[in-house]
Length: 294
Ligand SMILES: [Zn+2]
Image (cartoon, rainbow, N blue to C red; front, top):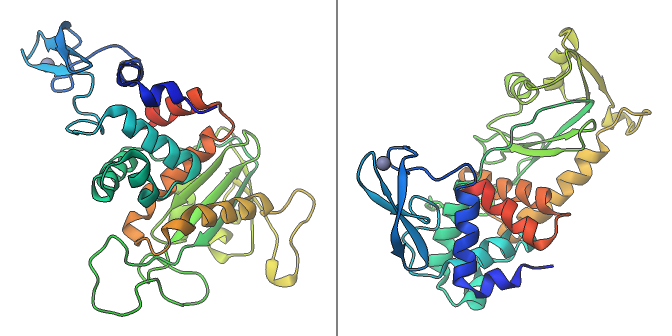
């Protein structure tokens, strides 16, 4: 259930912020010293004095929520509904009664603070790519009339406005990762598969040639299906889980259609986070969402 109480009480929201932000103990955001003492309050937030650099700070200092005249509980509601339900920011402006521009800036700031996913692979791993037609939204228009992406065919590159997005499904751990890249080449693929627990990682791919070098490498066991030959499943060898995850990714991006390629990363991190909290109850989901950005 939605953590409604946190969205109506500023004190509750402030307590949750403090609890998550200082989960490893309170420290000074400026000099990192842990020798701090409580020092009154700032609005609903606890204030502290750093005994090392002699400066004060509060629970909100140096977080993505600082310097805002909008109540913290409203920002919690905004990021919660955005991650959980992919709520459009236009809709949010009506719900929390804050201007679209203010919401857009703060949500972007929140998204930029999200950590990049770091796959720790157990294997076997399915890997596949999808190509997003990037538009120019959020970017200076360059005078061309077509701003919603190009109609090029085949595999794309970041350079021609069709950036590749890799989907990794770790069948061992059940984790899924959505990671944008500049191009779909060997070095990118090696980097994505670098952190693993097995000495030899089994990798399932399609027939795309960028995966071929993995075959000559003893640290990989590559098996593949060739879609062009009408072959989609060969026992365990398939990338179907990647493909269904790719369609969820497209659906996530569709309300933000035309988003420019240099803004794609934050939107995909939001999707990654959404998948992580998908099965969690409201309270726990909100905590996870905040932990990722604080
Ligand atoms: Zn300090």
